[in-house]
Image (cartoon, rainbow, N blue to C red; front, top):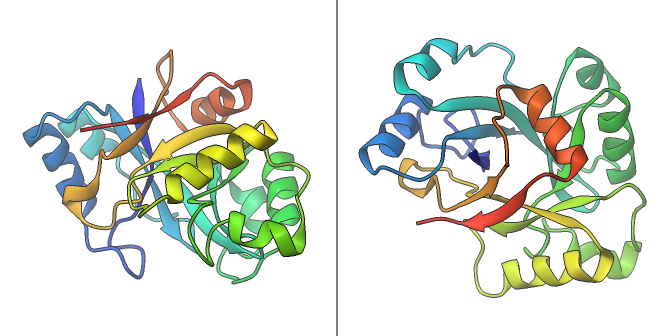
Amino acid sequence: MILDLHNHSIKSDDGRAKVENYCQWIRKRELTIDGFVLTEHRQFDLDSDYRKLEDQSGVRILKGSEVETDYGHVLVFGVNADMLAAFDFGQVGLKLETVLREADRCGGIAVPCHPGRPRVGMCAHLETLGPVDGVEIIETLNGGSRGDENEKAGALAETRGYRGIGGSDAHIVSHIGRCATRFPREIRDEEDLVRALREGEFEAIPCN
């Protein structure tokens, strides 16, 4: 199963895509992805229920979040009530070690995203802040990366032994499906996603 693990809808402050339009685009363009994760900025969307849209489109739609830490932006998967109470998703400058620890404690997983990006990526902070215990996975393929940002992410993963995921970081409809993550078995829900990530059963892939 191929899932695009990093995308934003109009629920994000800079997102311009409706979720139903993502689904329509995937089908119209016959993209190779089977579904995608919505990782809205500094929040978890508790209100939206996409099960009917999933049934209508045949596209798997999961939800996560993208939070901001002292080491840059981080994707959080497996968000639940315990995790929402553990730290403030809307806070800018969260401690990465806190997000990693609390996500794991609450049954989820945290993944630094676009680490090669200036200012908001992990690489930009490692020299001054040093490595952080608890990082096991980073986003090595990001569809919004420029220049050598993905190469920097790949080099970081190789140097430190991190596993890599892929996501498009789409904010507009036509950007979905640029990068994704391949899993050897079906991912039915967020729990399946977290389980597969923890077990290391995945690989980052470029698409289209």
